[in-house]
Length: 337
Ligand code: PEP
Ligand code: MN
Image 1 (tube, rainbow, N blue to C red):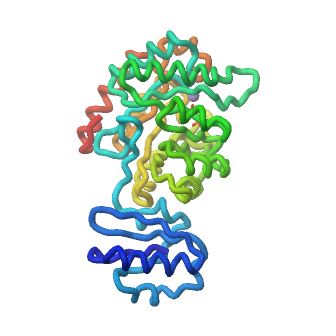
Image 2 (image 1 turned 45 degrees about the vertical axis):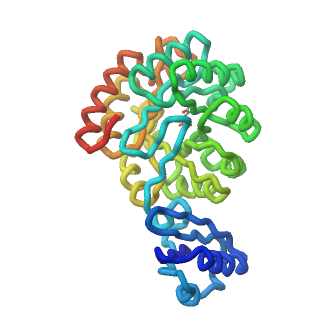
Image 3 (image 1 turned 180 degrees about the horizontal axis):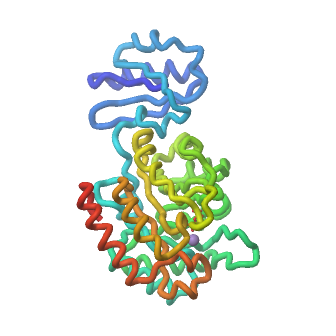
Protein backbone atom coordinates (compact mmCIF):
# COMPACT_ATOMS: atom_id res chain seq x y z
CA UNK A 1 0.00 0.00 0.00
CA UNK A 2 1.18 3.52 -0.78
CA UNK A 3 -0.16 6.62 0.94
CA UNK A 4 0.15 9.74 -1.20
CA UNK A 5 0.07 12.93 0.83
CA UNK A 6 -1.43 16.20 -0.34
CA UNK A 7 1.18 18.78 -1.41
CA UNK A 8 -0.02 21.06 1.41
CA UNK A 9 0.14 18.32 4.10
CA UNK A 10 1.90 19.55 7.23
CA UNK A 11 4.65 17.67 9.07
CA UNK A 12 2.33 16.97 11.99
CA UNK A 13 -0.30 15.50 9.65
CA UNK A 14 2.36 13.28 8.06
CA UNK A 15 3.49 12.29 11.55
CA UNK A 16 -0.08 11.38 12.50
CA UNK A 17 -0.49 9.12 9.45
CA UNK A 18 2.90 7.50 10.09
CA UNK A 19 2.02 6.82 13.74
CA UNK A 20 -1.32 5.28 12.73
CA UNK A 21 0.45 2.91 10.31
CA UNK A 22 3.22 2.02 12.75
CA UNK A 23 0.67 1.24 15.45
CA UNK A 24 -0.92 -1.24 13.05
CA UNK A 25 2.45 -3.07 13.00
CA UNK A 26 3.46 -1.78 9.56
CA UNK A 27 6.81 -0.31 8.59
CA UNK A 28 6.70 3.02 6.83
CA UNK A 29 9.21 4.22 4.24
CA UNK A 30 8.97 7.88 3.44
CA UNK A 31 9.91 9.42 0.13
CA UNK A 32 9.77 13.20 -0.10
CA UNK A 33 10.09 14.41 -3.66
CA UNK A 34 9.95 17.95 -5.02
CA UNK A 35 6.22 17.78 -5.65
CA UNK A 36 4.88 15.28 -3.17
CA UNK A 37 5.54 13.03 -0.22
CA UNK A 38 4.54 9.38 -0.31
CA UNK A 39 4.65 6.72 2.37
CA UNK A 40 5.47 3.19 1.27
CA UNK A 41 3.78 0.80 3.66
CA UNK A 42 5.40 -2.59 4.15
CA UNK A 43 3.73 -5.44 6.04
CA UNK A 44 0.29 -7.00 6.21
CA UNK A 45 -2.10 -4.08 5.75
CA UNK A 46 -5.22 -6.24 5.46
CA UNK A 47 -6.48 -5.02 8.87
CA UNK A 48 -6.48 -1.38 7.72
CA UNK A 49 -9.37 0.21 5.87
CA UNK A 50 -7.93 2.31 3.02
CA UNK A 51 -11.04 4.53 3.12
CA UNK A 52 -10.38 5.36 6.79
CA UNK A 53 -6.78 6.22 5.97
CA UNK A 54 -7.89 8.28 2.98
CA UNK A 55 -10.01 10.46 5.25
CA UNK A 56 -7.11 11.47 7.49
CA UNK A 57 -6.12 15.13 7.13
CA UNK A 58 -3.26 15.60 4.67
CA UNK A 59 -3.88 12.36 2.76
CA UNK A 60 -4.50 12.73 -0.98
CA UNK A 61 -4.76 9.08 -2.00
CA UNK A 62 -4.29 5.51 -0.80
CA UNK A 63 -3.08 3.21 -3.56
CA UNK A 64 -2.98 -0.56 -3.42
CA UNK A 65 0.19 -1.60 -5.23
CA UNK A 66 -0.51 -4.13 -7.96
CA UNK A 67 3.08 -5.37 -8.16
CA UNK A 68 4.71 -7.45 -5.40
CA UNK A 69 7.59 -4.99 -4.93
CA UNK A 70 6.77 -1.65 -3.31
CA UNK A 71 9.79 0.55 -2.65
CA UNK A 72 11.22 -0.36 -6.06
CA UNK A 73 7.97 0.55 -7.81
CA UNK A 74 7.25 3.67 -9.83
CA UNK A 75 4.08 4.11 -7.80
CA UNK A 76 6.19 4.63 -4.68
CA UNK A 77 8.72 6.87 -6.41
CA UNK A 78 7.75 8.40 -9.76
CA UNK A 79 11.03 10.32 -10.11
CA UNK A 80 14.03 8.40 -11.48
CA UNK A 81 16.58 7.50 -8.82
CA UNK A 82 20.05 8.87 -9.39
CA UNK A 83 22.70 6.63 -7.87
CA UNK A 84 25.84 8.48 -6.72
CA UNK A 85 29.09 6.55 -6.97
CA UNK A 86 31.95 8.73 -5.71
CA UNK A 87 31.78 11.70 -8.07
CA UNK A 88 30.01 9.67 -10.78
CA UNK A 89 26.25 9.26 -11.22
CA UNK A 90 24.02 6.57 -12.73
CA UNK A 91 20.51 7.57 -13.77
CA UNK A 92 20.98 11.04 -15.18
CA UNK A 93 20.77 11.95 -18.87
CA UNK A 94 24.49 11.22 -19.17
CA UNK A 95 24.92 7.47 -19.65
CA UNK A 96 27.42 6.09 -17.14
CA UNK A 97 30.34 4.14 -18.59
CA UNK A 98 31.63 1.54 -16.15
CA UNK A 99 34.66 -0.25 -17.56
CA UNK A 100 37.60 -2.34 -16.43
CA UNK A 101 38.95 -5.85 -16.31
CA UNK A 102 37.05 -8.93 -15.28
CA UNK A 103 39.61 -9.34 -12.50
CA UNK A 104 42.43 -7.22 -11.11
CA UNK A 105 45.57 -9.20 -12.07
CA UNK A 106 48.55 -6.96 -11.30
CA UNK A 107 49.52 -3.37 -10.58
CA UNK A 108 50.68 -2.78 -14.16
CA UNK A 109 47.48 -4.25 -15.60
CA UNK A 110 45.04 -2.21 -13.50
CA UNK A 111 47.05 1.02 -13.85
CA UNK A 112 47.07 0.72 -17.65
CA UNK A 113 43.37 -0.13 -17.74
CA UNK A 114 42.39 2.73 -15.44
CA UNK A 115 44.18 5.21 -17.70
CA UNK A 116 42.66 3.78 -20.87
CA UNK A 117 39.08 3.65 -19.61
CA UNK A 118 39.29 7.16 -18.14
CA UNK A 119 40.57 8.42 -21.51
CA UNK A 120 37.66 6.65 -23.23
CA UNK A 121 35.13 8.49 -21.04
CA UNK A 122 34.46 6.04 -18.20
CA UNK A 123 33.58 7.46 -14.80
CA UNK A 124 33.66 4.17 -12.86
CA UNK A 125 36.40 1.52 -12.85
CA UNK A 126 35.18 -2.06 -12.47
CA UNK A 127 37.30 -5.04 -11.49
CA UNK A 128 36.95 -8.17 -9.44
CA UNK A 129 39.10 -8.97 -6.42
CA UNK A 130 36.80 -11.75 -5.20
CA UNK A 131 35.78 -13.70 -8.29
CA UNK A 132 32.76 -15.99 -8.51
CA UNK A 133 34.36 -18.64 -10.73
CA UNK A 134 32.46 -21.67 -11.96
CA UNK A 135 35.54 -23.84 -11.45
CA UNK A 136 37.52 -23.84 -8.18
CA UNK A 137 40.68 -24.51 -10.23
CA UNK A 138 40.67 -21.17 -12.08
CA UNK A 139 41.92 -17.75 -10.88
CA UNK A 140 39.86 -16.68 -7.86
CA UNK A 141 41.07 -13.05 -7.58
CA UNK A 142 43.74 -11.18 -5.60
CA UNK A 143 41.50 -10.40 -2.61
CA UNK A 144 42.42 -7.34 -0.55
CA UNK A 145 45.58 -6.72 -2.57
CA UNK A 146 43.39 -6.42 -5.69
CA UNK A 147 41.15 -3.89 -3.97
CA UNK A 148 44.15 -1.83 -2.87
CA UNK A 149 45.63 -1.80 -6.38
CA UNK A 150 42.30 -0.86 -7.95
CA UNK A 151 41.75 2.02 -5.51
CA UNK A 152 45.22 3.40 -6.27
CA UNK A 153 44.71 3.12 -10.02
CA UNK A 154 41.27 4.76 -9.86
CA UNK A 155 42.50 7.62 -7.67
CA UNK A 156 45.33 8.34 -10.07
CA UNK A 157 42.92 9.11 -12.89
CA UNK A 158 39.86 10.29 -10.92
CA UNK A 159 37.56 7.28 -11.31
CA UNK A 160 35.10 5.75 -8.85
CA UNK A 161 35.39 2.02 -8.08
CA UNK A 162 32.83 -0.80 -8.21
CA UNK A 163 33.71 -4.32 -7.15
CA UNK A 164 31.90 -7.48 -6.18
CA UNK A 165 31.40 -8.80 -2.67
CA UNK A 166 30.79 -12.54 -2.86
CA UNK A 167 29.97 -12.83 0.79
CA UNK A 168 28.87 -10.71 3.76
CA UNK A 169 32.38 -11.18 5.16
CA UNK A 170 33.79 -9.18 2.20
CA UNK A 171 31.67 -6.09 2.86
CA UNK A 172 33.97 -4.27 5.32
CA UNK A 173 36.89 -4.60 2.87
CA UNK A 174 34.80 -3.53 -0.11
CA UNK A 175 33.55 -0.57 1.90
CA UNK A 176 37.11 0.43 2.75
CA UNK A 177 38.39 0.46 -0.85
CA UNK A 178 35.42 0.86 -3.21
CA UNK A 179 32.64 3.36 -3.87
CA UNK A 180 29.99 0.84 -4.92
CA UNK A 181 29.40 -2.82 -4.13
CA UNK A 182 28.38 -5.26 -6.84
CA UNK A 183 26.08 -8.17 -6.05
CA UNK A 184 26.76 -10.67 -8.81
CA UNK A 185 24.38 -12.74 -10.85
CA UNK A 186 25.04 -15.86 -8.79
CA UNK A 187 24.18 -13.99 -5.59
CA UNK A 188 21.05 -12.18 -6.76
CA UNK A 189 18.93 -14.23 -4.40
CA UNK A 190 21.44 -14.46 -1.57
CA UNK A 191 18.99 -12.79 0.78
CA UNK A 192 21.32 -12.38 3.79
CA UNK A 193 23.85 -10.64 1.50
CA UNK A 194 21.13 -8.39 0.03
CA UNK A 195 19.98 -7.47 3.53
CA UNK A 196 23.56 -6.72 4.61
CA UNK A 197 24.24 -4.42 1.63
CA UNK A 198 20.88 -2.82 2.39
CA UNK A 199 22.17 -1.95 5.86
CA UNK A 200 25.43 -0.57 4.49
CA UNK A 201 25.77 2.96 3.18
CA UNK A 202 27.36 1.90 -0.10
CA UNK A 203 25.53 2.23 -3.43
CA UNK A 204 24.72 -1.18 -4.88
CA UNK A 205 24.97 -2.59 -8.40
CA UNK A 206 22.57 -5.52 -8.45
CA UNK A 207 23.13 -7.89 -11.35
CA UNK A 208 20.24 -9.92 -12.68
CA UNK A 209 20.39 -13.60 -11.82
CA UNK A 210 21.09 -15.69 -14.90
CA UNK A 211 17.71 -17.42 -14.57
CA UNK A 212 15.80 -14.66 -12.82
CA UNK A 213 12.60 -13.09 -14.05
CA UNK A 214 12.31 -9.31 -13.97
CA UNK A 215 9.94 -9.62 -11.01
CA UNK A 216 12.41 -11.77 -9.03
CA UNK A 217 15.15 -9.24 -9.82
CA UNK A 218 13.05 -6.29 -8.60
CA UNK A 219 12.11 -8.24 -5.48
CA UNK A 220 15.83 -8.82 -4.86
CA UNK A 221 16.28 -5.02 -5.09
CA UNK A 222 13.38 -4.68 -2.65
CA UNK A 223 15.38 -6.67 -0.04
CA UNK A 224 18.09 -3.98 -0.25
CA UNK A 225 15.65 -1.04 -0.27
CA UNK A 226 13.60 -2.28 2.66
CA UNK A 227 16.73 -2.14 4.84
CA UNK A 228 17.01 1.58 4.12
CA UNK A 229 19.55 1.72 1.27
CA UNK A 230 17.88 3.50 -1.66
CA UNK A 231 21.02 3.71 -3.81
CA UNK A 232 20.44 0.69 -6.03
CA UNK A 233 21.26 0.38 -9.74
CA UNK A 234 20.17 -2.74 -11.62
CA UNK A 235 22.40 -4.48 -14.16
CA UNK A 236 21.18 -6.74 -16.97
CA UNK A 237 23.96 -9.19 -17.89
CA UNK A 238 22.19 -11.76 -20.03
CA UNK A 239 19.98 -14.66 -19.10
CA UNK A 240 20.20 -18.39 -19.84
CA UNK A 241 18.18 -19.48 -22.83
CA UNK A 242 18.37 -22.42 -25.24
CA UNK A 243 20.77 -20.49 -27.52
CA UNK A 244 24.37 -21.70 -27.09
CA UNK A 245 26.12 -19.47 -29.64
CA UNK A 246 26.37 -16.57 -27.20
CA UNK A 247 27.33 -17.10 -23.56
CA UNK A 248 23.93 -15.80 -22.43
CA UNK A 249 21.08 -14.02 -24.19
CA UNK A 250 20.99 -10.26 -23.64
CA UNK A 251 17.43 -9.40 -22.65
CA UNK A 252 17.29 -5.82 -23.85
CA UNK A 253 13.53 -5.71 -23.53
CA UNK A 254 14.08 -5.60 -19.78
CA UNK A 255 15.32 -2.01 -20.10
CA UNK A 256 12.00 -0.37 -21.06
CA UNK A 257 10.08 -2.93 -18.95
CA UNK A 258 12.04 -2.14 -15.78
CA UNK A 259 11.97 1.59 -16.50
CA UNK A 260 8.18 1.45 -16.64
CA UNK A 261 7.89 -0.63 -13.43
CA UNK A 262 10.64 0.98 -11.38
CA UNK A 263 12.47 4.24 -10.67
CA UNK A 264 15.82 2.45 -10.33
CA UNK A 265 18.42 3.00 -13.09
CA UNK A 266 19.30 0.10 -15.41
CA UNK A 267 22.86 -0.63 -16.52
CA UNK A 268 23.54 -3.11 -19.33
CA UNK A 269 26.58 -5.40 -19.34
CA UNK A 270 26.91 -6.73 -22.90
CA UNK A 271 30.26 -8.40 -22.07
CA UNK A 272 28.91 -11.14 -19.79
CA UNK A 273 25.76 -11.33 -21.91
CA UNK A 274 27.31 -12.26 -25.26
CA UNK A 275 30.70 -13.55 -24.09
CA UNK A 276 32.22 -12.79 -27.51
CA UNK A 277 34.46 -9.73 -27.90
CA UNK A 278 33.46 -8.92 -31.46
CA UNK A 279 29.74 -8.90 -30.56
CA UNK A 280 30.09 -6.56 -27.56
CA UNK A 281 30.09 -3.23 -29.50
CA UNK A 282 26.87 -4.02 -31.38
CA UNK A 283 25.04 -4.94 -28.20
CA UNK A 284 26.42 -1.88 -26.39
CA UNK A 285 24.97 0.31 -29.16
CA UNK A 286 21.68 -1.55 -28.92
CA UNK A 287 21.61 -1.07 -25.13
CA UNK A 288 22.05 2.68 -25.53
CA UNK A 289 19.29 2.74 -28.15
CA UNK A 290 17.01 0.82 -25.74
CA UNK A 291 17.49 3.51 -23.09
CA UNK A 292 20.13 2.01 -20.76
CA UNK A 293 21.31 4.36 -18.01
CA UNK A 294 24.77 2.84 -18.02
CA UNK A 295 27.08 0.39 -19.77
CA UNK A 296 29.43 -2.05 -18.08
CA UNK A 297 32.24 -3.20 -20.38
CA UNK A 298 35.10 -5.62 -19.69
CA UNK A 299 38.44 -4.35 -20.99
CA UNK A 300 41.93 -5.85 -21.08
CA UNK A 301 45.20 -4.64 -22.65
CA UNK A 302 45.84 -8.16 -24.02
CA UNK A 303 42.48 -9.95 -23.94
CA UNK A 304 43.93 -13.28 -25.04
CA UNK A 305 46.17 -13.28 -21.97
CA UNK A 306 43.47 -12.31 -19.43
CA UNK A 307 43.23 -14.55 -16.33
CA UNK A 308 39.43 -14.62 -16.76
CA UNK A 309 36.83 -13.71 -19.37
CA UNK A 310 39.41 -12.88 -22.05
CA UNK A 311 37.08 -14.01 -24.83
CA UNK A 312 34.64 -11.22 -24.05
CA UNK A 313 37.09 -8.49 -23.03
CA UNK A 314 37.67 -5.71 -25.55
CA UNK A 315 41.09 -4.15 -26.20
CA UNK A 316 41.77 -0.43 -25.62
CA UNK A 317 41.27 0.55 -29.28
CA UNK A 318 38.09 -1.54 -29.40
CA UNK A 319 36.76 0.28 -26.33
CA UNK A 320 37.48 3.62 -27.98
CA UNK A 321 35.60 2.59 -31.12
CA UNK A 322 32.69 1.24 -29.07
CA UNK A 323 32.34 4.50 -27.15
CA UNK A 324 32.56 6.60 -30.33
CA UNK A 325 29.70 4.66 -31.92
CA UNK A 326 27.62 4.62 -28.73
CA UNK A 327 27.94 8.41 -28.47
CA UNK A 328 26.21 8.77 -31.83
CA UNK A 329 23.38 6.48 -30.73
CA UNK A 330 23.11 8.34 -27.40
CA UNK A 331 22.67 11.60 -29.32
CA UNK A 332 19.93 10.04 -31.42
CA UNK A 333 17.93 9.05 -28.32
CA UNK A 334 18.41 12.32 -26.44
CA UNK A 335 21.19 11.17 -24.11
CA UNK A 336 24.90 11.88 -23.80
CA UNK A 337 27.78 9.54 -23.12
C1 PEP B 1 31.35 -9.70 -13.05
O1 PEP B 1 30.78 -8.67 -13.43
O2 PEP B 1 32.53 -9.72 -12.71
C2 PEP B 1 30.60 -10.97 -13.02
C3 PEP B 1 31.11 -12.06 -12.46
O3 PEP B 1 29.40 -10.90 -13.61
P1 PEP B 1 28.07 -11.79 -13.40
O4 PEP B 1 27.79 -11.80 -11.93
O5 PEP B 1 27.08 -11.02 -14.20
O6 PEP B 1 28.36 -13.15 -13.97
MN1 MN C 1 33.91 -11.28 -16.00
